[in-house]
Length: 97
Image 1 (tube, rainbow, N blue to C red):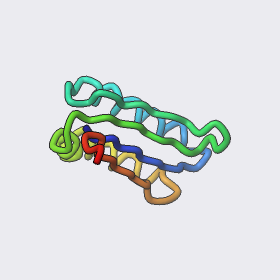
Image 2: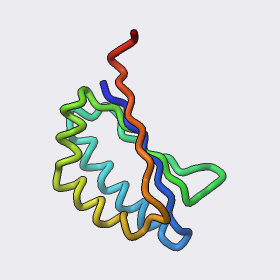
Image 3: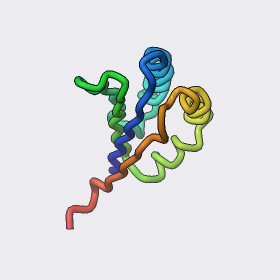
């Protein structure tokens, strides 16, 4: 299992457009059987900061998602709306030792 956490920040005038793009991607991504969880979370205090939590069945499934047309379109739509580069953390949940 791969746990992926992405943090992105947008300007106040762009946050609603960014959330719409993310929600569209969420709908598409949840159709992928290899995606166990895809959750968009808006920071409770900094309302222009978003975290996306994903759980994938395998690293190869996550890699396939990153090469999908939907992911590419999302990147094109979100990049100009971000105030800085997104931060991504990837954890391997299958190894416990």
